[in-house]
Structure formats: C-alpha cells, structure tokens
Image (cartoon, rainbow, N blue to C red; front, side):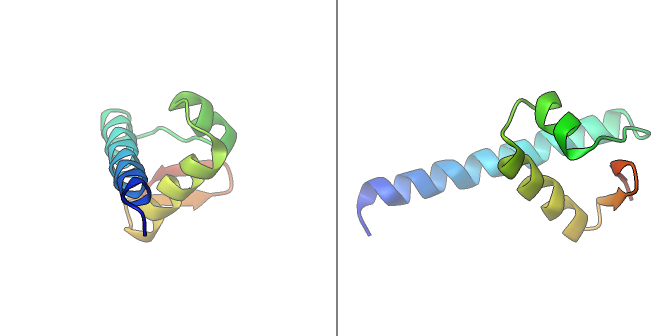
Length: 74
C-alpha cells in the first residue's frame, strides 16, 4: 500500500477519534442532550456518514443509546 494511503488512513482515524472526543465532551457537558443524526451532523459540522459512524461507535461502547427521538446518554 502506498505511503500516501497510510497517511490518509492515519489522518482519518485521528479525525474520527477527535470527533468522538468532541461528542463525548458535549454529552458530558449537556447530559440531557438528544440529537437526531441530521441535527448531530449539523451540530458537529461533519457529513452524515462520518457522524453516524462516530455516534454508532459510542453506542457500541455503551456511552450513548439510540432512542426513538435520537442519540442520548446511556
């Protein structure tokens, strides 16, 4: 695999980690925060796919739950 591809993967992985940290910080600061995917995507200014991946990862980790009205603290 070319070096440029490795660099892109590292950048993508570090930006995903940074986004997860931002999401955790906002939910920690506002425990009653509840956002739908479109709202979350606008709130963190990222595309829906990236946002969905980060939110779903936090659901898998047990930090968030996806309820009827959006993502909220577990």
